[in-house]
Each structure stands twice: as structure tokens, then as C-alpha cells.
Length: 331
Image (cartoon, rainbow, N blue to C red; front, side, top):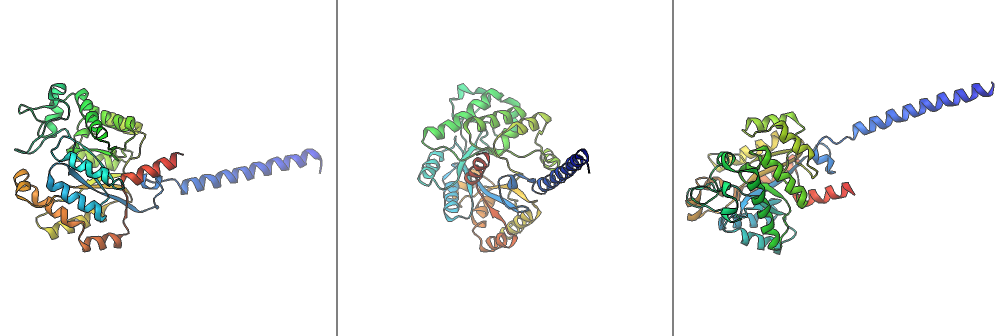
């Protein structure tokens, strides 16, 4: 064999081996490509990773009592307090005393009840488009969308974050009361921008899945191409799905409906919100949903539901752990 033929064989063999290696690497890469945000954050493949999240802390004493007990007992993983509300400061002082617990801010641009209401954190003259004829935040999300400028929305949501920080508490996450910050693409832009500026994760939903987008569109949210673009540009972790505890006519039906909800979820990271509160005359005077809230203050400590979670192999997490995993992946 001459030298030219010898080197030709070497070159061909090397190309074949390199091609095989690249194919193997490609196969390995495809096999280990994270399918959702849970896997991107290092949670086990194919598992349902859930945050049980109490909304409306700070709204009233009854909400605070139920939320604190759940968090301390470890029956839920996360909660968020409403900065404009009467019991917000109490909840935040408690959060400062319990730094191991995940407490965020439930950014609030509505004041929905008939008699129990609140204004903005900023002076009302500073954000006039957020304020109704009674000097309070608008009752419903469509009222906000009809009247509120994106500029006033951004000023107020940042003021609510700053209120907590000025009290000496940096929130673990931020989310949106009644979904208002998903009520208009420009509100969403302001929300996500604030999250990135403060490096505090928002309850941002991964909109790369067309089924998720279709679900939220069907629920009445204006999920436009513009909003999806804002979400794609968001640089902090997202959830794969977001939902709430179902309503029911009896406690037993409510637990059953919640089990059905869990069974229906796809693998990935899902935040499930609910609104626990202890029963009282004041709670009944505030909201007609008091019975659902009282059941939700009971449900997650129910041994039957706790066993159900174990049987289903549910893995629980919170926003503290999510951000720790996210920062580790970046480094």
C-alpha cells in the first residue's frame, strides 16, 4: 500500500468516526432535552411539580391567620400579600420573622368587594387612571383595562414592590391579583420588566405551548402575539401551567374536584392558587365566597388529600427553591 492510499484510509475512517460521534451526541442531546420548565430547573423528568399558593394574604386578618398556619405547618409552599390592603404590614412583619418561608407580593390593581375596599399605594392623584369615583381602585379587571394607562399601572406596581422593600422585606416573587396584569399586553410588559429589573420572579407562564395559549385565550385573556413576544423575552424562570382550586357545592365535592384537577395536569411546573381564610362574621360581610375560602383553609391539611398527593407522586416546590435552581443553572 502506498503512502497516499494509507492516508486516504485514515481520513475516511476519521470522518466516519466523527460522523458517528456527532450522531451519538445529537441522540444524547435529544434524549436529554428538557421538555418543560420543571426539567430545565433540574426536577425529575416526567413528574408533576406543584406550588400550592395562597393568594390574598394581607387582605384581612382572617386570610392572614389561615395562610400563616398553612405555611408554618408545611401544608402549602407559597403565599402572596396584597400591598394596598389593611393587613399587609402585619403579614410582611411576619414574613420578616420567618425568612425560610416563601412570601411574595400579590400586586393589586382592583378593589373588588362592595364595602371592604382600598385605594392605591401611591397617592391617588399620582395614578388617577387607576382610581374610581369612590377614590378606590376599580372593582373589576375590565374596569381597569378600560381606564388605566400603562404608565400608571407601572408606577403603582413598582410602588407596591418598593413598599415591601422599604419595610425591610424583599419579596420572593410577584404575581397579579385577579390576573389584572395579564388583562392588557402593555400591563404584562410592565409586570415582566419590573420582575427583571428587581430580579424577583413573576408568575410568568410559558407560552411556547399552543395548548396553554389556547386555554388562556378561552378563559378570556387577551393573549396576543405581542404578549407572547414579551413573554419570550422574559429572562427569569416560568411556570408551565397556572390554575386555581375549583369551586364546589360541598367540602367533599371540592376535595374530589381538586383531586381531578391534579390528575388532569401534565408533567411540568404548575402553580395552583387558592384563597384560604378562617370563618368569621367579618369575612362573611366582606365576600360571598367566604365558604369556598373556609374550605380552602381546611382542605390542604386534610389527611385524605395529603395521602392522595403521596400516592400521585407529587413533588412540591416554591419560588425560593425555583430561583435557587435557576441561579445554579446560570452559574
